Length: 307
Ligand SMILES: Cc1ncc(COP(=O)(O)O)c(C=O)c1O
Picture 1 (cartoon, rainbow, N blue to C red):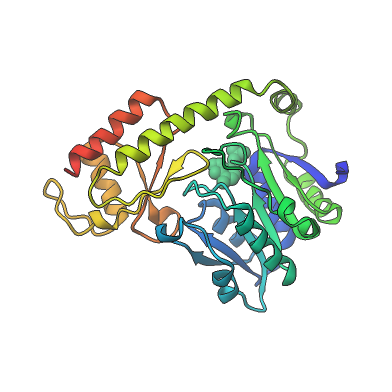
Picture 2 (cartoon, rainbow, N blue to C red):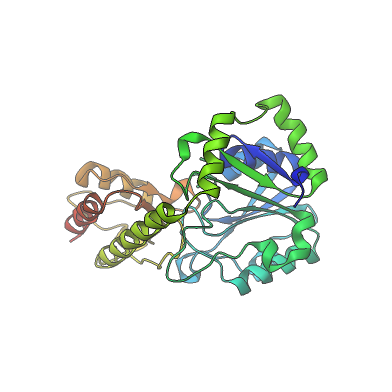
């Protein structure tokens, strides 16, 4: 890969912003699988594009199919957002699913913006295959986004990168030169040390996440009314909580996941993010990027509230 195909950015977030600015023209429709990370619709809107949500529920492990994408495609569709492992759901597309979506994008000349920031956080022997690895010809119409925030817990260092065809990266580089210029050198050197140095600490983190993932999934599953698909990546679990709605808990009857999240905060003093932040109501995002004891205490409080 040539240096002209890579831009180092101030976190993955700047790459996300610049990717949409580079390939989206006013009025373009961008297919956005939902539940989605909250920044994508905003970044699409900042590029004057229109996000078109394609929803996949817990019954399909929150993963969209080619049939769904094809049903949402119009002559204004120019970009697909592809995120595996996903924030907020933790879902990981299989190599076959990834290849199928990649071939569909290639066939229709649709750009893919693929956010691979959770790439190294996968479990149970799963590997998140990059869409350009699955369909190499797609590289000419794909922008990859990545960063050190998740694998190395280096969120505050603000180092990410984008990779794509040289002409697209030239445009993104022109934009960045007027926004922020380069990423500060100290942070770049620290990021390079993380990427090129021994990976055993990152592996220790991953193993700790895996332990916490198993704990939270098994404990949440004990709550009647909660459906918990097994997330194979990232550090989130995304239960379907529709079975808890319109029932009375401690004198309160939540009708949406937003109201449910308020109830949980109020009564159990546990912070969860309602599905409304990522797409439809009826879901909660719980992060398990915290200590084992706190995690267990948090889920047990939910078990008590909903018993
Ligand atoms: C899916 C996804 N992409 C990108 C980012 C951006 O990470 P950063 O800008 O900290 O590198 C995040 C952070 O939460 C994320 O969840």
